[in-house]
Image (tube, rainbow, N blue to C red; front, top):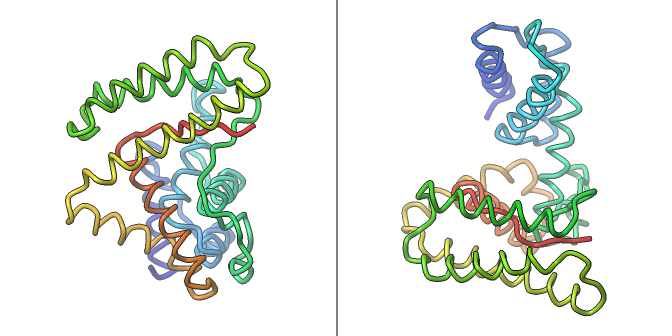
Length: 239
């Protein structure tokens, strides 16, 4: 996407978030958004950052005036850093991506207890099933995993030492099982479309990445898109 097109998309998205009130992305604002594009911030990531700002803004009470894109910069950059970490790019600038070593999406739960995390996971997974977004081919496994997670939630408070480590390892296994079932249920056309989306997200970084690093990042991007598409919770818990 050309920078001008990128800026127009951001302007249109901001207009929708502002209930139709148009705030032009021009002058310093255009320079700001152009910087996002030049740094490789995917459009979807930028929109997620804008969403985060609006969520916090609404929590403060009734909205008094339209939001300018400049106010969203910190949130866009935070979401961009989170996105890069989830893909193993570790918040490095584009010209340093080749040195990235992480290759797996791991949830960070700063300030969230294990029981609270498991409760959210159970609710999230249940809501996804009720909404009918999960493939029916995995119904038996989803029942089994939901039951196991609910039991883990009930017994996780106060768990320590080896028992806690074993539970955390099991949560990682459950997360991988869930992702495998959903990936395997994808129709070839759907898989191709999601892989293309992953390639588009990484397009700004690909030139500076060795093939093996790009392969890991592409798989992580694909899994993240699948997770978003099927509203899958991240079950893995890292302390």
